[in-house]
Amino acid sequence: MPHNGFGNGSTPILQRVGLAGAAARFAQRSYAADYVALGFVVAGWVLIQLFVNPFHRMFSLDNRAIQYPFAVHERVPVLWSVVFAGLIPFLIILAWSALVRAGVQKTQVTVLGLFVALMLTSLLTDIIKNAVGRPRPDLLSRCKPARGTSKNALVAWTVCTETNQHILQEGWRSFPSGHSSFSFGGFGYLYLFFCGQMHVFRPRTDLGRCLLAFFPLLCALMVACSRLADYRHDVYDVTCGGLLGMLIAWFSYRRYYPPLRSVMCDVPYDKADLAGPDGFSKLDDEEAVARPFIPRSGTSSEEVYQLQETEPSRST
Image (cartoon, rainbow, N blue to C red; front, side, top):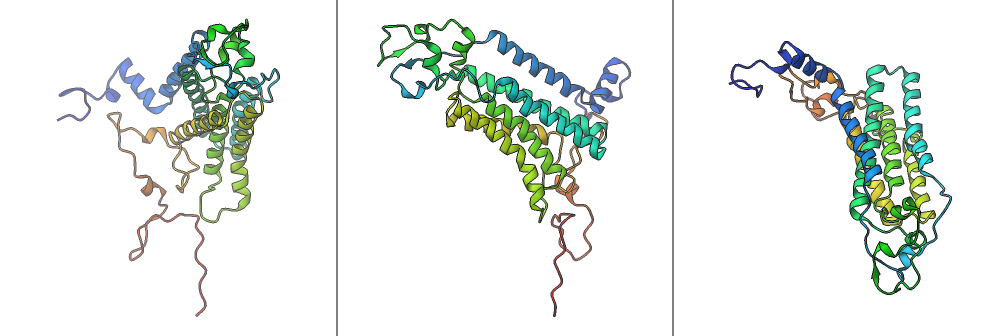
């Protein structure tokens, strides 16, 4: 029985002659499929920005949770959030790669993982924002309800008199916080990258490496807190946004790098080793990959970290 899934007697696609075989071999040895998928993610995000309006949840004028003032000047505008959480991690990764001479393949997968984390976070955040339609804390300042609107009854968004549609529609995009998810997506990915490159989770790692690795998370937290100070979101929005961004950052990082407790956590997966002659292959056990040597006979076969210090001999 053939195991390639193309029928009896058929040739595996990677061994075929012609355009289909060449394309399959190229996709196996490169990250073309990831770039194409990333392009679809970007296109989806752009379409949402252009054509999708949020769900307008009904509100009440006597709801104190939406009576906060509208901040004309934000502490961290959208452009600066992109610079902080997108451009700066990108430049740091490039500088790191040049400093340690990481090579083209390692630099490519690291930057690709960062872009995937940022764009996938942005897409999912906007999908949830528009679907939930939760009012922002400054909704009434944006809405400017018409005179005579009942204060103790639920009303629709049609009572608003604000003429700037961007300001008005953004009033129903509170959950989750986009700044929080984007900052934790970018800075969270940089945190994971630092942890892997400096082996932060090895036994007895020095405090300096830990502080350097955790500094991006502090930056992400400061961006998220600025949304509370501007009354753009409440704690619930910011917390969920941060968790969403961190989860996607971890997902994107782990697609290209081993676990942080692995001995080889600083080395990305080799694309050429992920597929067999038929296009699919079982990955090696990560515990086996993380074991740097074969234990001597009579010793324990449990996973031993290569960099772990030996226990000092006790005096008899």
